[in-house]
Image 1 (tube, helix red, strand yellow):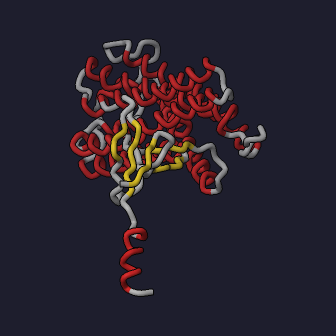
Image 2 (cartoon, one colour):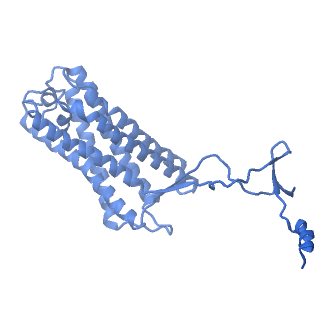
Image 3 (spheres, one colour):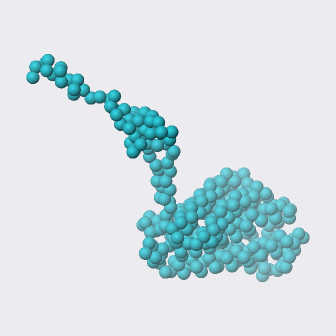
Length: 319
């Protein structure tokens, strides 16, 4: 083919630019920018919810160990202190009440609150999803969500235990009240964990339990013991707080030796049921989560930008 013939065919073979217009809400068409851009993306996170509770308790346990170490190095717990004189025994919270703890612990406790709020939010959404899937009733969903939100509120108020140091009976009430509320919130959360687990999160899709029988029985027994111990502990605190002279409303915290021994047993029983066992339980859940045997939460995050895609309301034409 001669060069002249090629030149005559060239205009016919020339690629013409394509113009794409997208229909807007007002009925008009606007040109779509087809320049090379990174396609729109979304982030998907699969969360083992109990990982957040394990992180919360782990940070709190670290704060306890730090408090014990710093208090011991600084000179130990004062022999004559208001808390021991009011409640009768050396409680573990004494390691949060004296220098240099107020200088160090509050910033670290912010991490604990952050994980606690995330844990409560994740559980709240998980209960919402279960309700929409008709797996739980509306009253049960509200009960669980109240327990979860209550835990977050109690965690925030617990910061008053660091902010207000007890130097008289009035400050002791402000100092101890948030802790008592926190112990009740922990019980409510544990009840929600067990009941929601029995109805939803501990079950397979076919309705059978993914957790072994011994785990279910242990969880039921534990939540009952935790509720009983927490109730007794709150009554012991009321015995000291409701009588301003320091002699106790019913039992004298210092004179009656059996009462001192009793309060010590209750205090450490609460530590085991309200704090140690939940750590073990959460660790077991995280281990099961690695095997894909837990009820996880899927979180998808994306922005509000639209990708450059061609739809039915798009005009394609050549210039």
